[in-house]
Image (cartoon, rainbow over all chains, first blue to last red; front, top):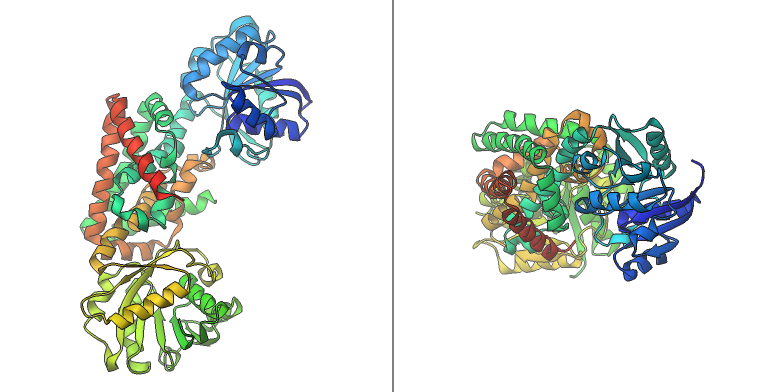
Length: 281
Length: 281
């Protein structure tokens, strides 16, 4: 990828901050403008080397951008992209990193103001709890980034964004927004719900014994309930389907244990091990 | 704890090996005799400093032991303890480390041959995949070890074993065998079953996207299906109850998402976060 002039990162948390750090550390952009809601959080981002310039004014922040990354939670992406398109240079490509794609690609795919275009993206990385303080320049090394072009996407935009992510170390996978949302219902929303349901079911008197399996199995339940409620609601049908597929395996295991059918139980556990071994770390 | 002469460790995997390493490294025993099924695995155990002497003959291995640790899987504990009692010095204390306590304490609590006594124990540590190669002298540092005395247990045996584990860095918790088994159904068996059901439900085409939440959420499914089937079967009633408590939280979340009741969903997710935050790491 040729070196860029100015990249704008709108919302400088763990992912936005890691994009900035990677760009700066690999010398892939001259300026990384961080757009945030408070000068205090932007100062943190600058201190950890995630951005070179800061502003709380979106319109000014994107004014010189060759590429705009909207890294806000899903609920704010559509409006932020539309506003950025009004104020960035003409024909600028705008992307995002949020974990649902139908909800943002749908309203933005028809075209933006002034010849700007939107192309959705989603890096598959586990969230931190500390925002930009969890940012790492190597966060995307070897990690998958899903890009979700549509029939309206220009090939050169896809290629440009794919090159960009590959320059940050990522492996790019192309997928329609609908397929993306079906996949993440299973790979991200279901695991969170499972952790949350188990944590909610855990009696307080067992907390001190939770050193082993239940500690790992509930870790994701520490995430922000409100952000997760948004994601689960936006991906409603896919989440319900994933819960039902999972539930039928749980029900089969329950019945096998209840009825003392060791072979039936072993079939499920053996299939589970085969799948898990195939996943690798 | 005063320094012991000979401790026998029967079954030198991760836990047995870690007991041996901790004893040797902290100079708490003169000899640690490892009893195993093959000379090859015992050589590995000696190479990693887990034992000082090796034998595949249980009767010889326990002949001079002041304390015997049976570290086999649960299915072999009762017979191994009984055989050890026939061949170790009179009035020796024998303990174990397996994850279920009713199944072993019940048959052994009435007394053993030649004045030997059994007192059950269970260190709450996550299992490795590589047996004795995962052993660590500090494995028990700050970890909970549950001891399960009964009305038949002598106070001096409990105190001796509690001192022993504390000398290895553990925090000792006392609990009746029944309560132990109820607790681990929730803290260990349910998390494994959840991981296994999710792994079994995961379609192969999603494996490459499993970098995030589902990878962590299914990790335990890599465990040995046969050993887990034994444990789940032996702890049947408690496991079914734990599955049902978990299932009712999942069902409540499913209904809230289906019916668009964001507040009800948020109640579950907020309770989950409160519990998880209280667990610590």
